[in-house]
Length: 533
Image (cartoon, rainbow, N blue to C red; front, top):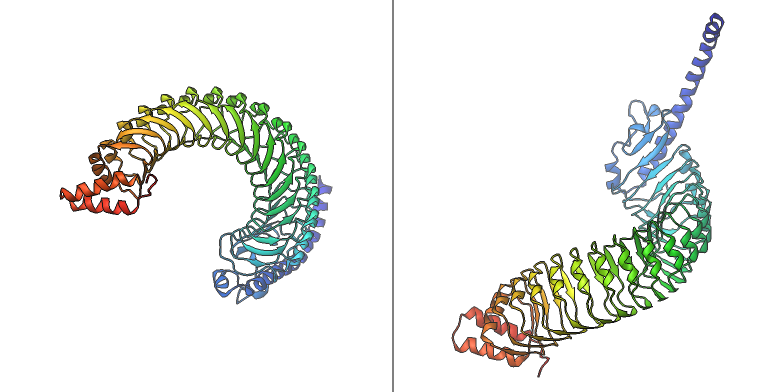
């Protein structure tokens, strides 16, 4: 014990010498970083320079100035800069005067949402310890420097929402530590590099809103840790690779608004963690796989605006977590499955512009969370189920362009949140239910091109939010009731036949009714669309 104590006493001067001798080096490194930051500051616009007022040398000891207390600058215990975090600050300048080689310990750079412009310098590769780089939401232009592929410690790379062009460098495939890559909302073109399939740790890949072309690389199926894949709004072509079925951790697959073709691969049903499947506005063909019922976590299924054919699988009724189902603008045929009434969490159902036949299932009355239902432009027939009146949350109802018959269900009067009601171009008959006057939120009402008859209910005068009323191509009577209706509603557009409207105006003027009534009707007459000459 005594020998050990004597040894420590003997070594103490050595430790002191090492500590004292290291201080000049630490101070020198700190001063070099401070000067590099000041040179960068000097390249900014004057307003930006004034905002960085804390970036200054000490007037009495400029040789000992440390940047560690400056705004947005963070240092390690040795006084060397390890982090630059200046977000949403209005920085107006470039990176051309930033001396990357002066910051050997820099690990974190976050310059999100500023007004930086110019190109991203290739010298950025001089930051060997960098693990986080966020240059998103600026005005950077030019190509992504391939030298970024040398930053092998990089874990997060955000270059989104700039004006970057050129292709995605295949060198990014060297960033084996990367788990988050966001290049969206730029002007990138060319193919998605197959080398991105080397990024085994990647969990988020965002390439959407560019002009990327070519096919989706098969190699993306190697990214087995991927949680979100967003490649929408590009010019991608070819089939959806079956290898994407390997991504069993995937929660978001968004590939809409491309030119993808071929069938929906059955391997998609292996993505049991999927919550969002957006494949809309492509050129996909074939049937909707009934095995999609395996995706029990799915909340959003958007397959609209494709060339899908065949029946709607009844198995979709097992996706009880689904809140949004869009199958519109395809070539689907057959009946609407009764089982869709099991989707009680559904808020949006869009099946319009297909070739669907048969009637609306009465089970739709169970969809009490539904806010939007679009069944327009199909070949549906029969009466509209009175159970639709159970959908108290409904905001938009579009049943136009079908062959529905019988009368408008009085139960519609319970849809008090409804703002848009489209029933035009059907074979509906009978009177307009007085209870439609309960729809106090209604803005747009179109009952035209039907076989309705009788009068316009006086209760329509309660529709104080109504702006558009189309009652053309019907047989009307009791014109006097319409006067009250038209005065009480702030109509911007009225569509009836002139033979109906003109007698109302004439009657109001002849009987010397309130000038407001006459002026209102005269105004409306100028807005009339004559569809029945």
